[in-house]
Length: 83
Ligand SMILES: [Zn+2]
Image 1 (tube, rainbow, N blue to C red):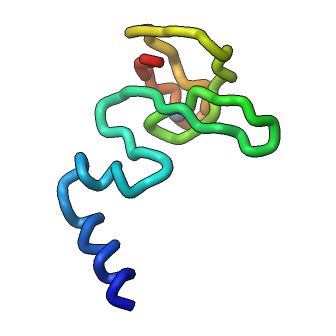
Image 2: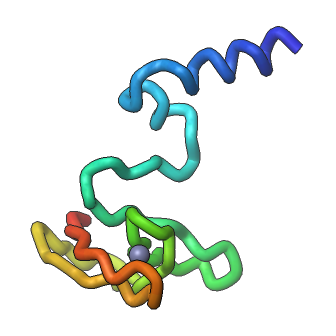
């Protein structure tokens, strides 16, 4: 029980330390994040605003500062990809 409360306390702390305790970092800056599809084992670029998988990431690919528009019909936000 103490551990659960301890974990909640961490979530209250600023976002920097918060992300260290999460598998999926919560984006605050319009940067896309990568999420692995556990079925296919592929990495996907995900929209930081709605979390939609936008496209699979080619292994070994490097993308810097590329802007993409989210494919989510309710989202359509522009996000930046750096991988
Ligand atoms: Zn989106």
